[in-house]
Image 1 (spheres, rainbow, N blue to C red):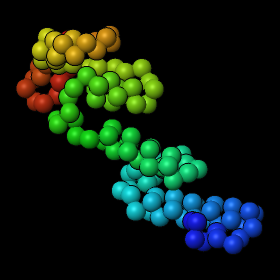
Image 2: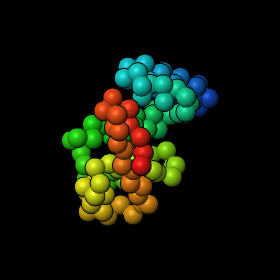
Image 3: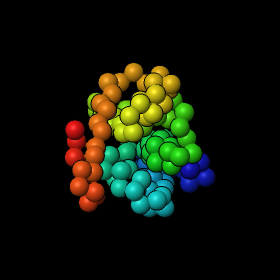
Length: 125
């Protein structure tokens, strides 16, 4: 930017800087993976720095859960949409115990299903 704005008026330098920032943002968004690109376009991020920050945060949230199961990751995943989380557990106490070990203090609903007619149609009892 400095070389392009050398010997320019303040107004010209400002316009050049804004054009470069806009182009940098557009190139960044165009080159990022499609699901994150859609999010960045939908949120209409105004600056390159904000786009990078949001992209990095979204990428962290999209990491495969089988590789990250620590409490911080689960809390981030659960709270990502600012909605009230609902956990549905199965196989009795096993999953509930795991969530309790992670100190996740949410109301847990335990639903047990049965295949009464052995036809892969499950009912709640």
